Amino acid sequence: MQARRKKKRSQGLRRDILPRLLERIVEGGLTPGSKIIESKLAAELGVSRTPLREALLHLEREGLVRCDLHRGFTIEPLSAREVREVYPLLAALECLAARSSGRLLHLVVPVLTRINADFRRSGSPDKALELDTIWHETLLSQSKNARLLALVASLRRAIRRYEHFYMVDAARISTSAAQHRAILSAIRRGDMEAIVKGIETNYLFGMQVILRKMGEE
Amino acid sequence: MQARRKKKRSQGLRRDILPRLLERIVEGGLTPGSKIIESKLAAELGVSRTPLREALLHLEREGLVRCDLHRGFTIEPLSAREVREVYPLLAALECLAARSSGRLLHLVVPVLTRINADFRRSGSPDKALELDTIWHETLLSQSKNARLLALVASLRRAIRRYEHFYMVDAARISTSAAQHRAILSAIRRGDMEAIVKGIETNYLFGMQVILRKMGEE
DNA sequence: CATGAATAGATTGTATACAAAACAATTATA
DNA sequence: TATAATTGTTTTGTATACAATCTATTCATG
Image (cartoon, rainbow over the protein chains, first blue to last red):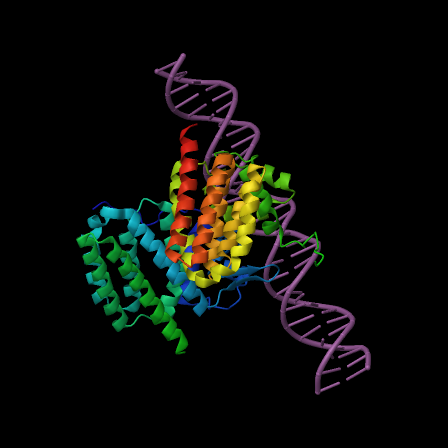
C-alpha cells in the first residue's frame, strides 16, 4: 500500500478549522443555543477572527449556526421542527440519486454488504453512526450528480448532531441494518421502486426514533 | 395600503451587497469564467474586502462562484453539466414541496391564475423570468418546510443566469404558461400525481430548451 | 528560437485596529 | 421597590496592514 503523507498541507485556515468546528458542535463544547464569542473561539483554535468568521458563515448556510446583526453567532438549537424538515428532504434526495444511478447500483452491492455487516456489529454508537454515513455515501457514490451529492452531504452534517445527541441504541441499529439489507435485496432484484421505498422507510424510521426520543426528554 | 419605508435599514454590508453582486453575475459585468479582483470589486461596491469576501463565500455555496486557495474567486462558467444537475434537483424538490402542501394548494389557485395571465402577456424576457419565479414561489408558499423553501430558492438563483443568458423566447413562454395551466387544473381536481407530473414536465421542458440553446452556440 | 531562472509587481489569506452597537452594572428618580 | 437614565465594558462589523504566494516580465542560457 502506498504510504500516505500524514500532514496534508493546509487548504487555508478557513477550510482547516471547519472539521474542528463541526466536531465541537456535534460532540459538545459548543452547546446548542449557546453564544459564540469570536475572539475566545479564535484563540482556542489558534487562528484570528477573520478565517473563523468565514468558516462560521459556512456553517450558517448548513443550518448549524445562526448569525444576527450586531449579535453575532449562536449555535442553532436542536428542534423537532428541523428534524421533521430535513429527514424527508434527505429521503427525497437520496431517492433521486438512487434513481439517477440506475443499474450502476449493482456495482456497490458487495461493498454495501460488507459495510452493513460491520455496522450491525459496531460496538460504540459513534462507530455505528460513522458506518451508517459511509453506507449511505457508498450507496450514492454512483450518481454523477455532484451537486446532489454535495447537498446530501450537507444535510447529513445537519442531522449528525441529532443522531449523536439522541444516541443510537442497539435496537435501532439492528432495525436499520435490516432496512439496509432490504434495500440491497431490491438492488439485486433490480426493483427500483422497492429501492426507493426502502430508502424512504429507512429515513422516516430514523426520524421517528429521533422525534420520540426528543419528546421523552 | 400601508406605506412602506423605501430605505430598509442596512442588514450589514455583507448582506447588503449580495443582491448587487448577484445582479452583476446574472446580468453581466461579471462574466462567467472571469476572475474577480477583490480590491477592484470592493472599491466598485464601495465596501472593504472583508464584507465582500464574506458575500462571495456565500455565493460559493450557491455554486455561482468558486474560490481556489491563493488563486481567489472566479465566476463559475456556464455548463450543460450544471443544467443537467440542477433542473432535475429543482423538479424533485418542488414536487416534494407540492406533496407536503397537500390540500393547501387550493388556496393559491386564484393568485397563480392571475400571475400566469401576466406571465403569458409579459413583454420583456426579464419580466417573464421574474413572473415565472414568482409563480413558482407562490406555488410553494404553502409548504411549511422552511429548509426546503430556502433550498429551492438557492437553486433557482443558480439557474437564473442560464435563463437570462439563453433568453426565453415567446414560444417557450406560451408553452410554459400552458404547463402552468395544466398544473392549476390538476390542483383544482385535487389530483396530486398529475400536479407532480406537471411540475416535472415544466422543469424538464425548461431544461431541454436551455440545453438545446447551449448546443446551438 | 525556445526554455528556464530571476526579479518585480499584483493579489490573496490572515492578522490586527478601530468605530459603532449591544450588554451589564450602577446610580438616579418616581 | 421598581423603573429609567448613565456610564463603562464587551463584542461585533468593517477597514486596514502585512506576509506569503502567485503572475508576468525580463534576462540569461542551451
